[in-house]
Length: 623
Image (cartoon, rainbow, N blue to C red; front, top):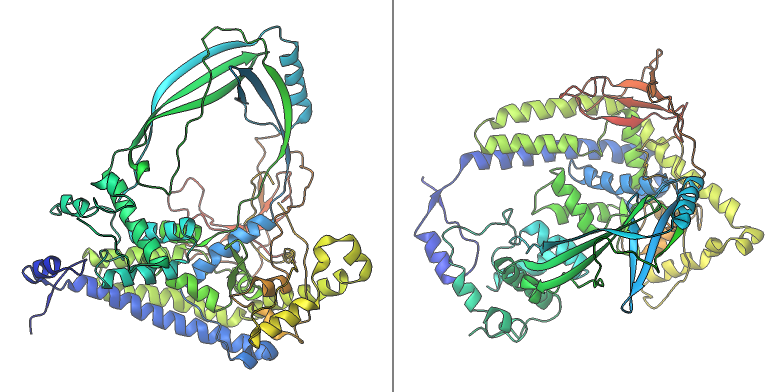
């Protein structure tokens, strides 16, 4: 029986009739790709979920059996968790370093102007001091360059699903899941087009003028758009999402914002400094798009060759900062970048790692991994399988696209991917104890920290040790329905086990926060997992990052740049890791002086100049 598909993206009479008059054949290649994805997700997810659930239940009966939780695996949810854990560990390992920079300041016509140092910053105070002395000894400060050029701020592209989710998180402070639920409700009411779309281009045959004309009478943006009455029945988040969609639509059809940028460069004592000013001439799309700002930055008049008599140069001290924890918008951007899931499933995968208690949101709406999430990532890393890395899933998504293009067939991809995961599964069964060992380390760390950090003297001298059993009592009361209980307790950041693997962040520096715990695992088994909706329970789990990285002295770097920075292990251990190529990785040791000197790591054995090099990297667990 012939089957046809009617394609439309908005619930309006004209759109539906247009689709019915232009019926299309079902694309079997797309059907095959969807079936392939569904079958692989089911088979892989069921196998690994059963494996890790049964193993962890048998080893931690007091935690998992009581709550009958499943420890699920998904080839999309694990990389999603991996992004959260990777960022968290990068912050934990960040070494804060002190830097110094020169700043020149001038004042004229009642305007204070700051000129930034063209060298930006240096990490040697003595060198900066010498340069400062040279500047102060110089007899004159001269304007060496005054340049003016047009400057534009580009209007946004048409709204797609990913951008809608990110904007809702950042600008409206909604979760991606709630944003999509509201958008679909607006779609079903006929206010907006279908919100799940991967394209940010309008169809060539779409006449946009009538859509703009509809908005001209709206009191909020009618002056900008110039017979459409505001949908007064929309309130709360429905109105917020609708307003965002309309303003974004009008903005992407508008003109770019335009202005003039002025750069003034001065020289003193052989050093150069630059100040930048901006004069906005036409706000363009910004007149309707309130979600972005672009403002004037006034500079007084300077002439090239002019001598500045009042200009002073000083030295400022600063410290490098670790990256921020990921929020939902950051996580969606990473998932999109690495091909994890689709635009329609990103919010679902994020909710899954929260519902499974692998990660939670802190008070700033940023993700923090729980002990279980950390242990899952560490456990598979130690086995030698980068299950939390995006490469395996991204490869599958690329194969599915080839099916849609007719370049691969469903059976080929199914066979290849099934065999690939079967090999990993069989070896994971042998090494599964590494998973429980990783989880046990985090739980033991919690108990040790409780004993060490809850004595009276430490509580007096350490302001972060204010976490008490009151937090547990309040959490228990909340579970019983008491929603009026508040807590001022604050947790510290977990000190990660040195046996766990992870990438070292060199943002010129690594911070490890202090641990806080509220009760033993045996007494409060649910705390080992974390409650997704309450940051106070994360405080009890000792995994809330304080944002106060530990300052460490910089290690002098090896000046011999020709010496090899690594050495190969002649006695590679039996538990060799596999790289992303599916081949045994090479075990190397860091020779270069620095925080990681002497550490062993695994990497793809192909040379770094080889295009086939898969970029695999994993720290080796200490013996």
